[in-house]
Length: 198
Image (cartoon, rainbow, N blue to C red; front, side, top):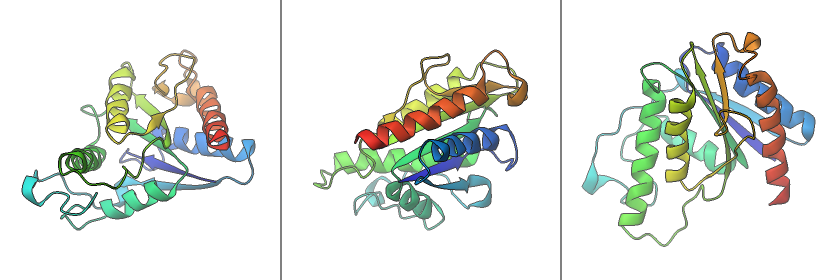
């Protein structure tokens, strides 16, 4: 059982990374057989979508741009579940935005060009995390939600606000309102439970 964490922040040791790590640690405590891996987008080269149109997806889910996105996508396909974390910059950090644009575009052209192969991430459970300096995390979570739905993934919802995933403001260790550490642990448990039921 493999769970992949994707940290969209450019700060590798910030609040976003802490919450992604907390989800993965909780998943391992829930089921010791869980294998985890974290990808720091800050360490990768992911270029922006070029809107290639005619060139896009000549093969299913194959982008013409040669960079680290293909490795990220391969890791997503091989995982049983995915956790995506993003801070609020001017909405979503640019590197994560580039990844989202490219994969959403490939998903769109997969349908338009009528490929027979199923979408490779269909129904894959995905947990979402958003961290802000003080604003509501909901706009970030909504953007992440739209992304995972475009890839036909299965978002794992929480029963506590902000419902779409784990939200945190400021120093997440001290956030008593949204309780991001507690909810990250719950999300880890829910991801394992979903995978075990499949």
